[in-house]
Image 1 (spheres, rainbow, N blue to C red):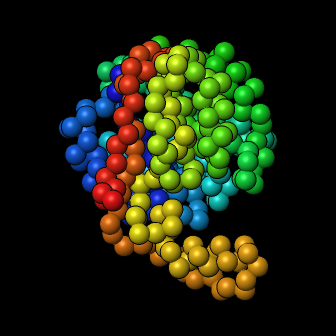
Image 2 (tube, rainbow, N blue to C red; image 1 turned 90 degrees about the vertical axis):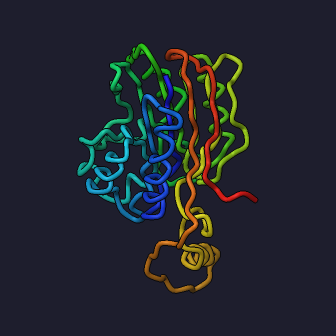
Length: 262
């Protein structure tokens, strides 16, 4: 089974970039199932049903999320094909995993987990949470894990922990693709961060001036806030194409990108 996974979709530029990429990649790679991380698709708020509907119309079949779950009311989209981090502490709307059926009637379990380092939401121990979850689900074809974390060390740790137990562990959150795309020794496809779908001449997809002002405020400067605005083109997409080999390993993983050449 071929799974195509898009990195964090950032604002309208990210939506436009994914739409353009899907118009080409669907025919070129013929994925059996398409997933995207949607937590930044509506920066500063929860992704809207309208945005999800538009992304679904491009061929995306499932969505993952992350710490921006707390930016608004997730219950508005909880019935969509979307999963939020399964290891958030407390009682929250939505679910951290779903088993989807592809057009060819194959099952894909999509799991979302959250790291702890340098993020505000408290999470439960993701090692224990995923161990318990894997006892409950039994999809026959693929298990895909989006691990949403700030540090690549956390993502590597869970990747090694799950090697040979899931089809793929792919990191999201930093918006910067890592150069460690590989199959782990027991066959699990891995990349510490897939990257993003959004504007290139930006700071992790966000307007440079506004992002710099936010950083300077964190450093103690009295810099006024400015209204959000979408960066201009060029837009880029970072994704991975994974060919799975059952629920516990994969045959291959390939990094895809539309980023301008250096």
